Length: 266
Image 1 (cartoon, rainbow, N blue to C red):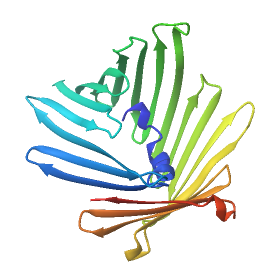
Image 2: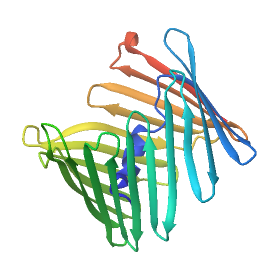
Image 3: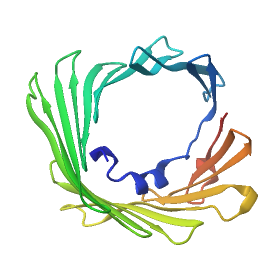
Image 4: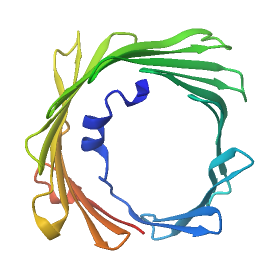
């Protein structure tokens, strides 16, 4: 497990599938190349698309080669030089050279901004016992007025039976984030996200759940945020290899704040 994933179960339940956009995502194969076309409708009614590909050549994996409607490009590649080690290169607005190394229960990552040579980041996560992980990360500014240690954080997660809990620090230990998920049964899962600091002992960012026991209706998710916004979504397989998502959110009982979105992936 990477340190960036130490809070993943509860975070994903409270964030995945919620949308306020109209999107269509199509995946297919063109020979050895996996092709993805993503189209989104803006509030003005215009359509913009991103076309991407994924393939491998001579041991080099092109994980993402994408062209966007605004003319920009994304390139993500990876290479496995030896067992447990993966070298990565990601270019979008910047360019980062990275690595991931796993040995037993230890996973270490690193990333260097090779375009501006401005930032170095690293992290380590260790599985100290079954279901228990601890780790930390730090980033260092290499140039400019803010050269020096930019951030450093630690975290831990624990999973046992239906319970998952994680705690990570933020803003150089001035804040702690706690995520909890509990699987009530095979159909119902509940999750919460809170922050804790000296200025505010407990701030509940979101409480939500996921329910799959409605048969043909699909997966129903809902959450309530600390800002008073209630969100809900339904995810359903509407045909073989075709998934539809309908989502909406509203602040309190004010219908004028209603936002909705529909997404189809095929």
